[in-house]
Length: 136
Image (cartoon, rainbow, N blue to C red; front, top):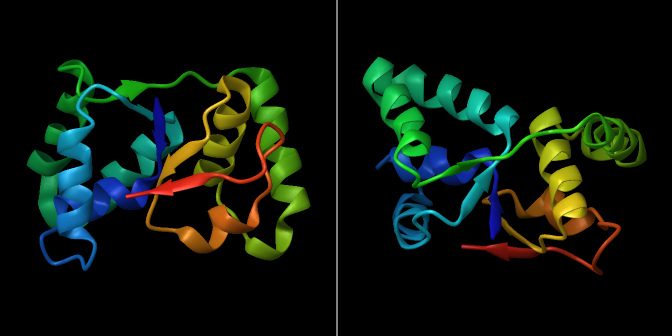
């Protein structure tokens, strides 16, 4: 299982994004094996709605109903860990979605993160592994 950050879906949906080709191919190839934080859903919906409108937002949400993407559930322990991560890496100015990915990865022992944000995810040192494997 792979956890995905917002940027992967935003790039996959936007043909003008420089990461579009790699991200679109990645999302298609991992059909049903990408776990998504609820906070990532909010970010992606907002961003793709800006240029793609309601139909783009709805298509993204339909990916969960069809089983192409899997919705993760955050626990109270995850939320506490998110706060710890934000404090520990304050200099990175991580957002809550990034912190949720880190907390979920640690709890579920997932080591691979799909992201175009290599800066943040290469700096963070998760509790369960030396470093994250970043794709695509």
